[in-house]
Amino acid sequence: MMNPDWLEAAAERGAREPDMLGSVFAWYRDLEELSVQAFAEKLGCTVETLHWVSLCRRPEGESFSEHVNQIAEHFGIDGFELSRVLRDMEATAALIATENSPLEPEARAVLRAARDREKNS
Picture 1 (cartoon, one colour):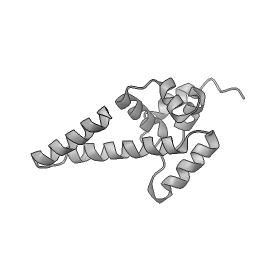
Picture 2 (cartoon, rainbow, N blue to C red):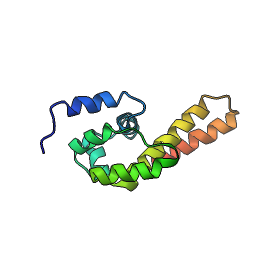
Picture 3 (cartoon, one colour):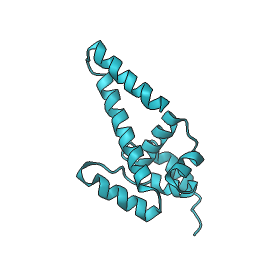
């Protein structure tokens, strides 16, 4: 099956929509300094498949695992890796939200240390 000419542009547009996987993927790739190709390889798929997956809504809530599994099965990608990426980004968003709240300096230092450790591992 040929991919439509509009697929890449749609995936790029999805990267600007917070409820789409494309936005999570773009943020993850930026933080991890990964190319689109390298990120596709991490998920075990082609760049074209990654574009299709980017158009899906972001799994959340009680159905998170079920939706991750459905997406992984439908597109033939690594569900464990997809879940890990999504959970990592949820944790990062929570850290950022917490960092912007009024915390004691010691608590902010712990958050920064945890984030630095995650980058170095």
